[in-house]
Amino acid sequence: MGFIELIKSLFKNKEKVSIGLYGHPNSGKTTLANTIANDSFGKDIGLSSNVPHETRTVFKQEKVVIKENGKELSFDIIDTPGIATKVDYKNFLEYGLEEGEAKNRAKEATKGIIEAIKWLDDVNGVLLIVDATDDPLTQTNITIIGNLEARNIPFIVVANKIDDPRANTDKIISVFPQHTVVPISALRKDNIDELYKEMLNKFK
Image (tube, rainbow, N blue to C red; front, side):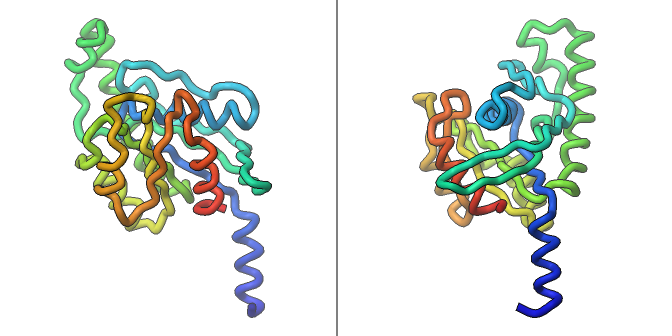
């Protein structure tokens, strides 16, 4: 190794790792962030619910640590709002929200999406959370992956909700054959160790 390469490697090792959680609303991003945080320091970092766009602003948790097979990775979690191509306040009315509250939530959600996209400039790794009960071939997922590839940001496709009988992880793997896909249940922590192993390989 030459002198320049040595200097670069030293700086790279000291670079702060920030991992962004991206995906559709209600794909399980905050649930996964809470699972990782609980494993690291025993507490949740965000609120999740069945109402879309519960997370409407980017939340950052520093100094999260995961360990697997004697390896360790320290990083910041960047939990982002759900990415959607369109936010319609009428969708929130179905969950019992009043019209004024629904319109405000839609406005905040739209701002959150813009903020999440801007954060791609500050992350050096991404977990793309895909709901394994839904069709993974969406404009949102394609757009996110396109952005990650264009920016050379390493990422893992996380097929979440495998505890649901409707989950179809084979379809997700077939849609993204060139990418690492890890099936998990963030809620039940199924296969979380395998995700940690892949994160250590991909982001270390």
